[in-house]
Length: 239
Image (cartoon, rainbow, N blue to C red):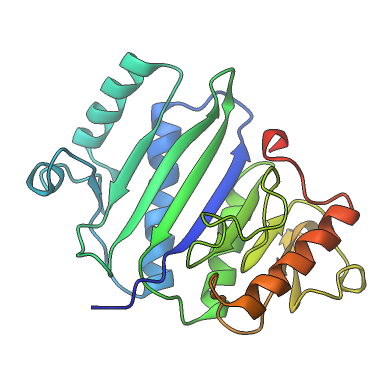
């Protein structure tokens, strides 16, 4: 069994239109495909259930996208809870090796705003693959902020500003940030949309980020303070 590392990616976004069943499921399907590239393994995704046996009976995707059963399940939930679409998927793996993808509505009064939470028990050993994952999420979501952390950095409130987006390992910001503006960053990577820069990924550490490591926490904190001073660390309510 792998050591529990709790790598987590939070994606905050705003659609042009209200979030609907197909948009939710298609977004989760696209993320599931990128997860296979990130982890270099095939995955089968299931809806959460009252028991493991119950969950394993409800497969979310086939090779072509959401299954008919998945559409039925989410449509039923949507009809009951409209405009909320809050769904969670799990890969069926054992504790220490499992992954999850969840979709949440950010605000009931604004059904255009949503959030994906991507969880992985294991440690990500390849920084470049994680950067590619963040780039994919940034390019496929409108007005996105994408934050990556591990070992409970955000959960344990190690970030500086509890009411604002956090850096952790890396943060995608939908703004152009020049490297000389953030000397605290280990890397600053532009995210392009054609010939135009759509935003920037700032990375706190050269090493694989450990959200319980005091040195890593300090580097992430320094970067958060700098981004706030630049006006680039918004309140959670502004996302």
